[in-house]
Image 1: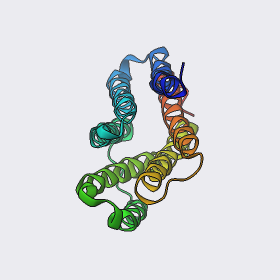
Image 2 (image 1 turned 90 degrees about the horizontal axis):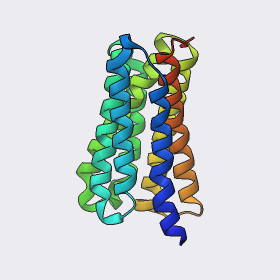
Image 3 (image 1 turned 180 degrees about the horizontal axis):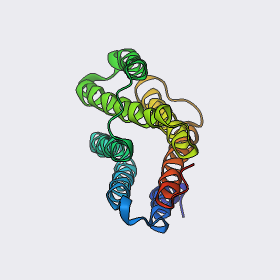
Length: 196
């Protein structure tokens, strides 16, 4: 098998394995939360597959955008909407800084990328807000995960729009898989009632 074929198989397979973690967590009182998290990770999987070909980049972006909105919604199901101004301003400032840095190189992708950055900043704000509200292990895992997700997506943007760099695939996928694995494991612990 060629390296590209192996990559095309194992990239989505790894995400499928991460999603499967959630099926071992059962809690009838949190079935809505579980379904939202599974749906979010399925959209991540769809994004994985679409991003295998550069011509589907915008569709992959759209799939991950939906995933981020679902993750934010799932976090809200746990503790309601988090409205911490300071962290919100910090995430928005970070997102705007990234956007205006990328802007000269975005071309006709300027609006899709802007919308995507707003979505991931909102997701990260809500995920980090869980930990600010309750300093427990599961929320700490989510807080770390949202930062890793932002970092991974920023590295995708750097590699695509600014300057390709060595081992970009390892950096992007490594941080992305760590992020979704932390989210899935945090959700599993919450579903098992081990959210201490």
